[in-house]
Image (cartoon, rainbow, N blue to C red; front, side):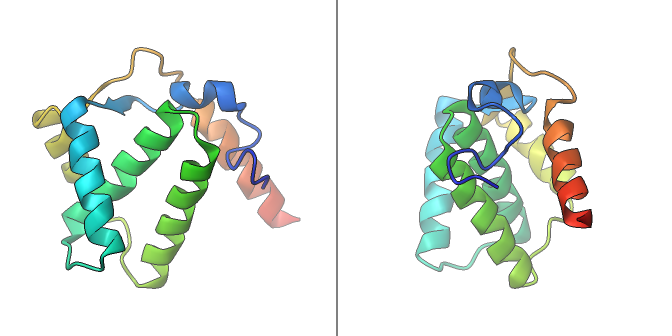
Length: 126
């Protein structure tokens, strides 16, 4: 993985097309609140951790920010290492949608993220 492009082989200019949703203005505020609570070590629910993961990747990719994508990846590894695994993420995502914290991404390209996943799986084999 390249620190300049943590989602290689996806081109950084294609990052905004990776996911089906993007943050709304209110979603950005909520994301910053969750991120701050996490950094400060405040107690969070599984739902909040799920939402942090989702909002983080939407934020980082929409902004073509490779450092934030790397930080999101580190966050996921850290949470998994603490035994905080993604569970009931569908419900968390539905809640974000229902509260208009995320909106449909008009630039979404189905299957683009799969290209990255397949690349990672292939490199793990070797």
